[in-house]
Length: 318
Image 1 (tube, rainbow, N blue to C red):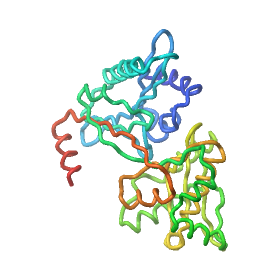
Image 2 (cartoon, rainbow, N blue to C red; image 1 turned 45 degrees about the horizontal axis):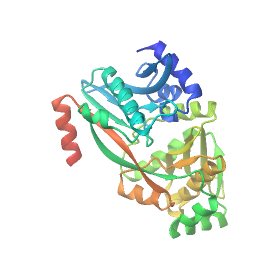
Image 3 (cartoon, helix red, strand yellow; image 1 turned 60 degrees about the vertical axis):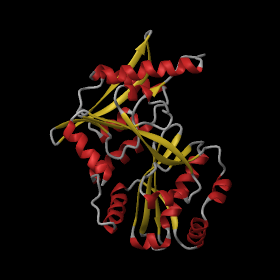
């Protein structure tokens, strides 16, 4: 692989609707320019499919892994016109076998496939395993009125109360203030933020340069920021990437107002809204309270090193 393939991939992404988390500029930020590469499936002089990957090393193990603050990666596939269903499945098999056979040597592989990929059989046949994860989606053809009706009673009550108060939502580019609120949120749980301020700053800067994000703050009547949400987007979808709220904002439900603004932006611009999902029971309940629909996506994995396999087996049980 290398720079030639990366350049071809940049050209491919310029005309194909590859989702934001697999865009070359996104990978440059979250992985580092030297730590990601891409496999391209070419046939008849045409590039038909791509699979970027993040190759890293941890505790001496070679890993093909998910980068931080990145929901999904995996294959992107386009299809020749006029394919029958059985031909489509055969095509996916050919493409995926090519990707599997050309991956770098690894001790562990763990990648979240985008929700549009529903066929992982070729990976299964090559010894990979899969577990289903869930996100919550509000579809672009929904109206803001119909979405509002699907909100839980608690969310509607909190939003109404905030709208009648002096709390308001404003757009900003202040990623430092966003990180402050994120840190406050994690601190209440006794957890260290799992990514750096520099990384978040880099994502915001790169997205702003490409008109690919909205950063909304809920502000108190004195101008204090009490909640914030970063929403990144591509041609088809707005993703709720990062949120943070201070203790006062949490009591008031200020995050509800921020998310409502993100949903409004998605629907007004003809995009789906993706909560990015969570397997945490409390977070899942909160996302579900906005009336979004549960949608599965896949975590595909394989451990070729027995020690690594044992570690993740024990971790999954615990």
